[in-house]
Image (cartoon, rainbow, N blue to C red; front, side):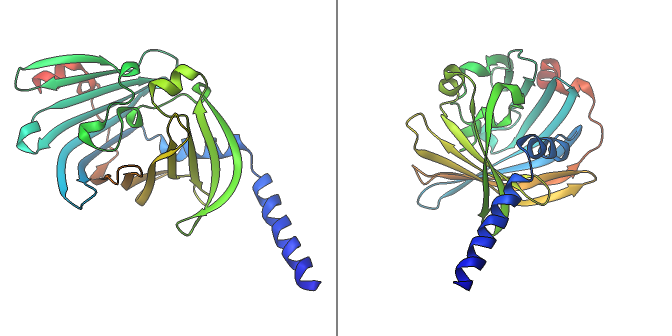
Length: 258
């Protein structure tokens, strides 16, 4: 009887712990640590097939919070030779404006504009990361539900269910909903599970390493695994800097004439 009382007390304490924090506090904590004004790094993407074969892509990556409504990202690829000098520029908006991507193709020396709303299912350079994973999203565009706490890979996390506020959003990105895991001690998004339109688990995102940059915390090694195919992609970021990046980097002209 005494053991039963102790067990009930522990479960009650865990339940109260989960209820002591609100959804807004979790999301606010994440935004404070994640949205870095300027970020530069050397990016290595490892593409790992189900049978263990590995391919690598290398690029210089730049990210800038242009203003409260716009985040821009630039990727300049250096390896392999087949993609050398290819460039991707992504402008994402938090005020409802259309997110846009430009791609520079060195073989034809041409910049092509792509509406990201029509390429939500497209994958970043053949990896398991979609272009939508590199688009900053307004909180109002998604519905979030705080569903409790869970230990993920030995780390206590707050668990939040997130899904597009409209059926069109879910269809555009081919995801019915996501389960996000925010680390309890610093609110970093430690993991994310993606569920396809049939409600089946399709991908798992996991943070393997992160660094502290002043008030910010940034993942430097992240893994995305396609559960349905066995394919895996690992992004590693080195030479990370928060120095100010010139605005001209985030223009189609720079993409072509750098």
